Image (cartoon, rainbow, N blue to C red):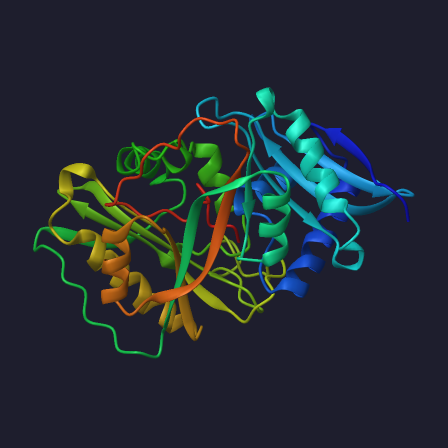
Length: 341
């Protein structure tokens, strides 16, 4: 096999989507971690309003690699993710995709995610003059270990999400909770409904806190991997999702609290409620993602029994603007994302 031919497209055919999905599944099985984040996989399957680009590395019409380029962030610059079929690694195909992404990125500004701290990704980034600018910790804890009881203020009511009833109110609360986190806070009804369609979605694990009939906080949990899907058929799940390269695991997917309601312990209480629910679903472990620099959040999660497990690392070309700051009082799955499962 020779040098790859890189094809750039804004939309892929259903056949191309299937081929990329199979490649991603193969990489997941090989590496025990999904190589692409959740929002990339959703864009791959459903498309969207964001003018992202798909890059296909082909050798003799065989798909050997895939990259996703999102050029929409004018402040921090475009972001990209890539993966190579495990059968064709070590042949320079990753460099070919990264080089083409860099050429496609305006002004040569590019940020690249590496999911899982793999030496090959770090080596490629260093050889291309990229530097490490961000790290998301994956933290885990055993769900067999004791959990303290959640404590809510007396006037706060806990219930679960109702599809079609709570959609707009939740999007509004999410925007307020993540006002300083554009990647999470910019979610729309469409973003919510895309995830409601996912096999892992489970209304019983999507907790809402109300005060006087108004949403003030939430904890959206997730179970993925193995054969565990979401809730019963007709309630957003019940089927097995894609491959994840690991046994079933619970996730603290997103926890958010209204800025006006912080300081009452809602975030901790909601986290504990979700962990208890995840334990009832059967996984042995729970996981979450948190910025490496968010010491306040890390200390909270350590107090709940979480420890550092792995890291997702972002590298950037030298020609870029400084990264925006982060709010220590909220937690998002996203690699902005996420969760990337």
